[in-house]
Structure formats: C-alpha cells, structure tokens
Length: 150
Ligand SMILES: [Cu+2]
Image 1 (cartoon, helix red, strand yellow):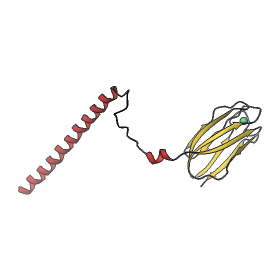
Image 2: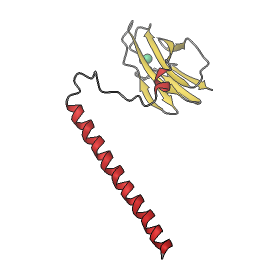
Image 3: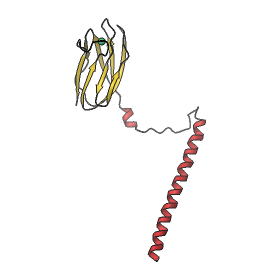
Image 4: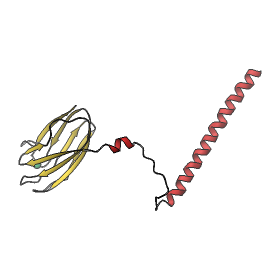
C-alpha cells in the first residue's frame, strides 16, 4: 500500500506541475497580447531573434547581364548559401531572370525593360538550378543556363 500511495503522489505531483505550466503559459500569452497593444514605441519590448546566425550571413551578389539572347553570370561556381542576382538588361527587348531548382520555385526578377536593372534573391542548396528568361520564347532562343551548386 505504501508503494502504491507513493506512485499516486508522484503522478499527482506531475499533474499539478503540468497544470502550473499551462497556467503560467497562459499568463505569458496574456502579457504578450497586452504589451502588443502598446508596442507602437517598440523601445522596451525585447525582440526575440530566432536565428541570428542565419540572418547575419550576407547574401552573395552575382551580376547577371542579359542581352538578346544570352544570360551571362559574373561567376560560374556556386556553393550553398544566400544569393542576390543583380540583373542588368543590356538588350533591346524586355527580359527577366527566373531561377528554379532545389528549394527555389521559379523565383523571378521583375520584367526589365531595355536598360533597366532589377534583382532576385534565392537560397541555393547543393544541386543544379536553371536560370532562364521567362519572356516570350527567349528561353528557346538561348537565354537559359544551368548552374551547379556544390
Ligand atoms: Cu528575355
């Protein structure tokens, strides 16, 4: 009987502990909601940074020149990481740059008129990516590249 009672006591303690946890969590949520209403100043509320190491890594900038009808990159070796492709349309037709591959689902720059520049960002993983111009039939006319990320 003594052992049984101890078990019951242990179980009861755990249950009480869980209930306290739930109650205290609820309290935190209420506090958060309350301070949200006055968060216009945002001077006192500590902002949690989920993954500072990820965000601290600057994106690699790649210069992309598009002409009728070629795409030229400033580099041809890529390692996994964040990239910003700076696209300059030096042709006399509208062009854009669309990136498709592992983890990147047709990320696209704006459509760039002749002489315009724009950019598209993507996080590249190990694997191969297609870079194309999505305007008209420019892809078939030669505005397509495959890059390997390793
Ligand atoms: Cu094009």
